[in-house]
Image 1 (cartoon, rainbow, N blue to C red):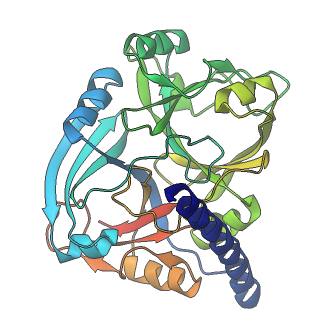
Image 2 (tube, helix red, strand yellow; image 1 turned 135 degrees about the vertical axis):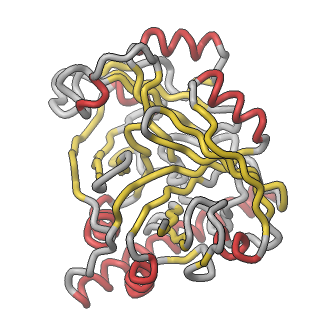
Amino acid sequence: MRSRFFRALLLAAALYCSGKLASFAQAAAQTGAFPRANIRAIGPVLITVNDMDRSIDFYSRVLTFEKLSDTELAGEDVEHLFGVFGTRVRLVRMKLGDETIELVQFLAPRGRSIPVDSRSNDVWFQHIAIIVSDMDRAYALLRQNKVEHASSGPQRLPDWNKNAGGIKAFYFKDLDEHPVEVLYFPEDKGDAKWHRKSDRLFLGIDHTAIVVTDTDASLQFYRDLLGFRVAGESENYGTEQEHLNNVFGARLRITALRAPAGPGIELLEYLSPRDGRPIPLDEHANDLVHRQTELETDNADEAVALVRDAKARFVSSSLVLFHDSSIGFTRGFVIRDPDGHALSIVQH
């Protein structure tokens, strides 16, 4: 019975998302080019976890993140931001290199686990990509710590792919089943910062990757509305890509997006197979499948008006004001992109 109900939710979500993609495209056609939101930086990525102490231990001990802050929050403003009534959260910010993540545990109300049969082409897929200085050492350390494989093993992308050839990558899962990527760039790939001499194994976060159903529709949202620039594109396929994603027949259109600062956002469109499942309509911030990418703006009031005019779907009630700095910003709101991925737009 629960399985039939979940399938019905997924079907409803698929129909809803196709409608959102169409309505956003129609809005763009009717109004011409949208005024762009002034997004200054991407990051951190917020990750909902089940047991905060256990997650802090994993990210700090295994992946060498440093804990920066540890805060408990509750109240109407937090409820309105996350769109979850009765919210009380523990929020921990952690840093690796120049980049940060935020782990959030909902002390109340508790959410649902990630579906056990999740695949890399399901639309709820999102990972952070951690750059390593040595893939062999990184993989050995992860094996030593008994991480769960998501890839069959580290993959070296083929040289015929000029935009990705020589890159080494491996997917694994954290303790809550969130996918994480470790990535090694050869000398001719990646930002110069990843090639500086360092005695560290885990260097920082290059990007967060999300599965999308239609790259062109996503570009209308991320490039034309939010103002990101396209930093790179490739089409990846072959046995290496299949074993990296652990999806037979995987062929991906990959688009790298950047803001003036912070890690990037990478759009992953599966050209095949196209049987990935949509984000359920009843997904909430307290569900472990929830990830939320923070975008910093100079003017949250202007940004909220722009995305409302673009018919974006709101998670927050509207723009939420905070009168202290414990959450890390003074005003912000959460919306969903055309596929349902959560984005918080905040003003510090």
